[in-house]
Image (tube, rainbow, N blue to C red):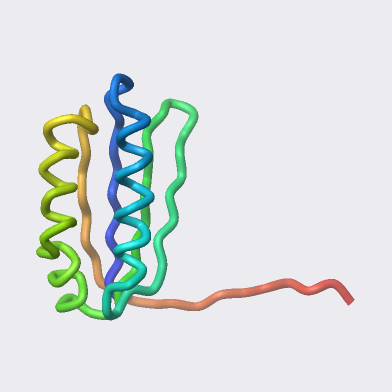
Length: 102
């Protein structure tokens, strides 16, 4: 599994347009081969962290190069983000625990 950690801060003047684009990109990503999940968290200081999971590096490359995603990336640099950082990593271990009441 490949993890993408996308940390960002938004420019306040374009938040509504960002939210619209973000919803469209989330829906598009979910249709991509190898897509597993995406989850966004917002910290008290307004830093946003999105964690996206894909099966393989090739799946990530297809997503990165998708024409509509490329357009959104360019728009993000021009209008939406004051800063961002992307980290891509291979998952070394994956396990979970779920407690269930008796």
